[in-house]
Image 1: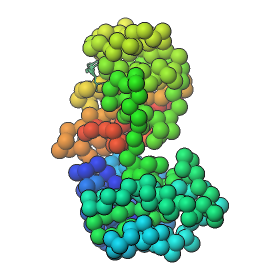
Image 2 (image 1 turned 180 degrees about the vertical axis):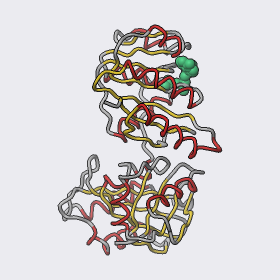
Image 3 (image 1 turned 30 degrees about the vertical axis):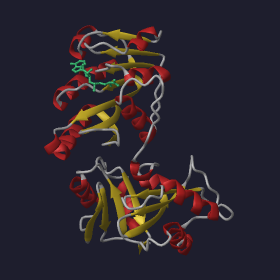
Image 4 (image 1 turned 90 degrees about the horizontal axis):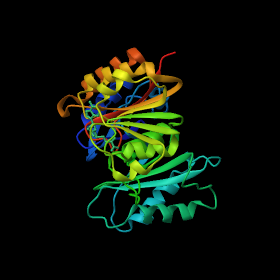
Length: 337
Ligand SMILES: C[S@@+](CC[C@H](N)C(=O)[O-])C[C@H]1O[C@@H](n2cnc3c(N)ncnc32)[C@H](O)[C@@H]1O
């Protein structure tokens, strides 16, 4: 197995991501930036040793990791056939007992092919010998087509950090779409595997994207925001709007909540203080989801410090700068027993 990995982050977070890798594997031998947010790292150890340690670290800024088993110079003659040959030469890495799918990313502006073309061509050739499951694969063949090189990785889906190519998760804009913010909550639910139920409190709820999603999972949603919600939400029998600040709400709040969300546009320290205050309102089986708004120039230090502060009151379950986050990190946590 190789010692090279490709990590994906938001464009601009490459160095922060490298700092995170160095905490796990202190001496990377080579680092190359392949495209915006895509970094190739040659580790000083085998991928198999590296990946065993990853779960012990909170990777916040890395969205996706794949091991590289091989690469080849792009010939441009017939990219699909060339990729098939490389994959065929490395099928010894594909486990016959695990369902697979193929994920292709093309970051070469001169190539008009679509990832789908490569995925379908290669999977059609493999289907007789291997079981494909696009929705719920256990192992992924990752193909990255760069300016002059094709990289191939084969890994367990659970080790990739995200089941989407590069962690770039996409949601359909449905008819009842309210705000882009709803994609952040949908992504957190899917990426972290969160279960939402019971009574929810949504702090900083307007215009109501999160409230709408929460109302689909939970019995009731108390939406707190001095600003108004989208008009469609006032028809919903399980949504109550408290038109006030979170600080005002907590002065007289008494109920218990199973889920507390906080997407308030506010300084992180102040927002964490509000969550610490909300802790007493959490039921026994509880879940909190919060976005930490970060200053652009101090994202890593502020995120680390904020999570350390949250840890005084809560168990941190997940923390990640998700694909739909902008200068913020989404954290999921629950009350300490
Ligand atoms: C990013 S928006 C929230 C978007 C929302 N999650 C959605 O899905 O539509 C931030 C919200 O925080 C609210 N906010 C800021 N300070 C607040 C406070 N002290 N108490 C309650 N809400 C606050 C703002 O009014 C704004 O509506």
